Amino acid sequence: MSSLKDGWFLESEGLWPGQRFSLKVEEVLYEASSAFQEILVFESTTYGRVLVLDGVIQLTERDEHAYQEMIAHLPLFAHPNPRRVLIVGGGDGGVLREVARHERVDEIDLCEIDATVVQVAKKFFLRSTASAYDDPRLDIIHDDAATFLQALAGKKDVADDAPSLEAANRRRSARDWRGYDVIIVDSSDPIGPAESLFQPQFYEAMRDVLAPSGIVCTQGECQWLHLDLISNVVRACGDLYPTVDYAYTTVPTYPSGQIGFILCSLAQTSLRHPKRVPDDEFQAKLKYYNPALHEASFVLPQFAKVAIDNAKRPPTTKSDDAGGGGGGGDNNS
Image (cartoon, rainbow, N blue to C red):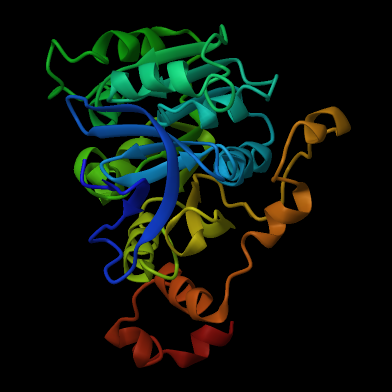
């Protein structure tokens, strides 16, 4: 792989032109191509083991908790009683580890298209992110997430041999099936296998399999690099969900040191304030998330706040500009 040179890993990607990021490599532990992407695992000098997909860092053992804890606990603690959870992507196991901490969760589905990522995580990251793969609540589906969601919603255009069809039918046939309480989309950047996960159709498909007060939390890119993309997704979600919001966390080894989360709910609610808080035992196991940080993560710098607030607003029509086209007296009633 061209990302390794002279004992250094070098990340350079067209999604963030004009900048690079490097880590010194102590030992390459794994390097191969799966059916979907190139996979690299190496031991770094200062960040522990590192997982790279298609030349882009997905996690390091030193800072992974800043991402995994936030993308999981923001929606889970914003929901009053999450019982069924779907994780899209997340083959490294980090989000699963955090979801599994919630004892009230009864069922965890993990839909990861690339089985090789799961195998690699179990081999090289068992001491960190891949520690919950033996949880009895877990069901793993190796298929495209869009296909699984279509099958779960009972769409007729799903192929009979789709790997996820059996799992979807099993879920739908459960007597108490009402949909997922929380869906967490732990996707890579919007290229390659993850490109479809940033399209409006995917957010619509998730809406169709959510429980009535369900919450979606997706990887939401970086406000410094992809504000137009974030705004477009927020705007599209506003047509599908009554509640849409944006939060972020800081991860030193991600581009520009930040990554965000787009949160949506079928309920008219505030996602900025946790409905529940971790008890002392739960909190002691965490390295990053806490209730105060939950609320603070939604406080954006002004340039991002303006752009995302504008994206949340419905488009202005000519009649809006004209004060509703007359009848102004009714507006005061």
